Amino acid sequence: MDQYEEEVKERWSDTDAYRQSKSRTSKYSHVDFQAAKIDQEGAVELFVNAYGNSLPVDSPEAQRAVLAHRNAITKWFYDCSIDMQKNLALMYIADERFKKYYESRVRGLAQYVHDAIMAQ
Image (cartoon, rainbow, N blue to C red; front, top):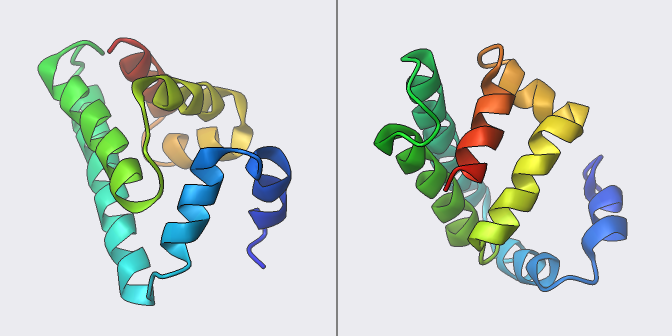
């Protein structure tokens, strides 16, 4: 079992998003998971580019990253509404594990991703 799977199950197993994600991913091959990772990394790179160029969080480029982020989640895991994405953004700065992921790319990126998602 994945190191985070138990926590995810405990926190969200009663949600539609969790059930939809489990249903979808249960059918995925290793190749599917790699494709999902590529889509997710593509969205992160859009954020890195916007942030690295000091673009405002409401700039078209930052908002393209926001849309790519939401679309990757919807495509591979569960229907991600804007409200759901904003809830995720809260975790990106509150949960050190998520924050570390973004900060390992570029210092300050977690806050930028959060702010860009909230700006939509």
